[in-house]
Image (cartoon, rainbow, N blue to C red; front, side, top):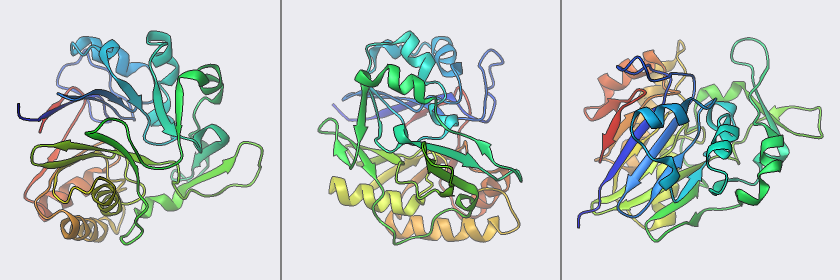
Length: 281
């Protein structure tokens, strides 16, 4: 049996064609392969639960859930998830429980931390990650240890601090992980925000899994629209192609509109997803 993957975009920044589906600034993906069913991220609220029902996605059948990093637009729906599926297990970085996060991109700092109380209440169902690891023989959760390539310029506005501290420091994204999934033709990488840099994520996934060919990359690139976005996109594409020359790129969420236009000019095989889309790889 050939190994393929379907990815349902339960929530994304871009609205769906179906007006019944809820849209928000956040990302949640349901990933279904012949080897595992995975919920990747939970958006900013419980919208993903409602959308899953409308899309006939049975979240009760998932093998596990995974949170890519600690920002509220990816972990904000955790309370709703546990209210609906209290027995399910969630993998996430062990840094998240002790840290708070903030963004200054709009000219003032705003809190984008997770709800730590929810994490404490459901601690028995949370599996903390301190390093990359295989979850099944075909699915790995990978931290980007590579620092060879650039990281997004938008990271300059993102901060973290320990919960007991009053001092913010620039976020180093030690709390960010990606999924690497083996398929017949190679590797599918799901990296919801890619704060560590898409090329660094790809290289780290290749090195950890020992699979050289990357078939597809699905997720945000954190390319924030700005005066330098065209140059940033050009560098990002060059770096991605250096580690995965025949890749298909599926992006949305934290990839800005100007960045998307620039990507169309730089890449022949790039696709943009929105709420309600189904990606088949």
